Image: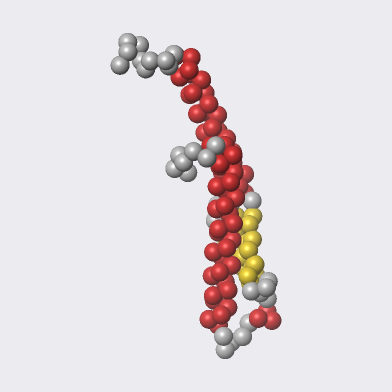
Length: 111
């Protein structure tokens, strides 16, 4: 290695890179907070079951249309609830990934 560090990388470049990394860290924290406070919902079965979660994947509510409740077919209702929850989580994850990509430029930095 060349004396004084890596060839072609002056101290100014490293300082600039550190500044950019710090800004990216701040942007990521802001986006995580913003998306974390948003609500995401998914509706399945033609609106029979709706799940609402936050971007932090905390459940806010599950709404079930009373007309669909059939004591003889509880399994279908359970499947619909599960499907709505999974769709809401997927929507929140996609929103977070999209927001992060705008900051990281598509770099996979383990977020």
